[in-house]
Length: 312
Image (cartoon, rainbow, N blue to C red; front, side, top):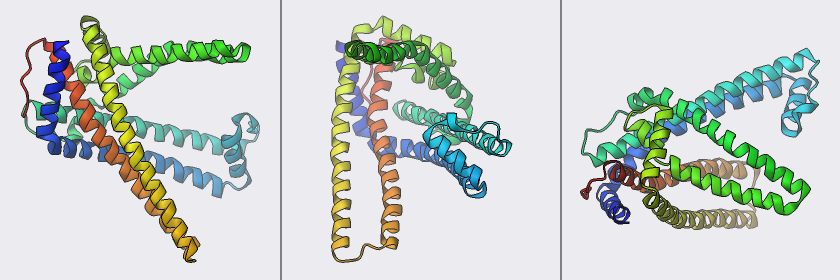
């Protein structure tokens, strides 16, 4: 239990002494990540709008089919299928952008490592470029693991609910427990991948091996981290609801004085979206500034099994 307590103390001291540097470094990487995601989404949105507006009747048919049910698509209509193929290619390209955005996890993790070890600041783009293929490979492997493990349980939950409600509930409990166990054993994989420069499969194996050798400490640490995340989540939820209530009250006030026009609604909507996106970005950065260094310090401690010095 000592290593957990020491890690928490070291983490607190580390974050307290380097909060500004960590936050700014992580925020910069998150901005690159957000920009990459936005490019992917906008690309698909523009193509979708082009198919919808320029495709006439076929655009309407495809839009309704995507929203309602793909099985109603008239697959024998060549024009409609051409439009659908364009959308499929656009969605694939958009998906590639979303996958590439995960490469910016590399500079985030290396920022934490460099700050802890008092190393020079890392180059965000170079770091992301260097680890892009490894991180994409890791995401694919992790997805396959979760599909192989979770899919049979999800099918069991569906069939259990259809046949007998209680069986579906039992399967759902099992899914939660299995997800929790997978999370415990794989929580250090990205540190192994990005900081120790191991391959996707090797990093997962290393994380599992590390937890196996330190199972009790890893479980205790995970519960402590979950509790801290829970508190942070509650705080941000309260703040978000406060903002939503303030916006609604402002809207009601504007409406009562007769100032709620179409243009006013559009302006409020645009600024609301921008503000909400910024809020989510800052929220994610704050959470990562708190959580990721905690896991990093504990990972470093159990990896070396040596006394770790507090980083002020």
